[in-house]
Image (cartoon, rainbow, N blue to C red; front, side, top):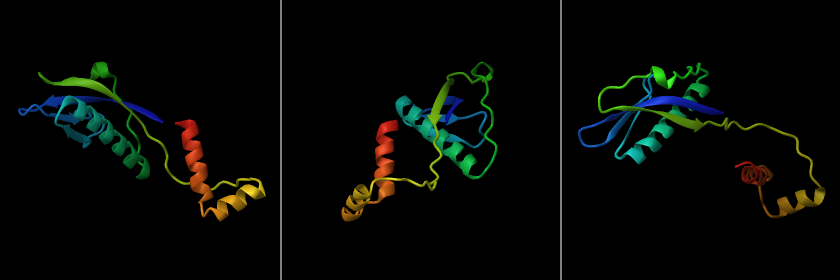
Length: 123
């Protein structure tokens, strides 16, 4: 699922950036350069949403960027992350006996082979 939140990038004296999310109190990150700060902003947002999901907490609605204000020398940017539910689910799968025999003989995990194949197809 995609999540998009406004983040405030504050410029520090040493040229680095501190990133905060007005809608997610406590979700803070830093980056040494602007490119690094953008990466860190995405990482922090993803981890925060994953934490809220695992803890079964309500994920706050993102503010409209037009309603987010920053101080002088700061700026607001939208940050997007794709958070996937990584929990394992059990499925019944049918396949020809000869395929099952080859998987067993090769010492492979059928679950891993299926996950790898589906990951290539959908990513």
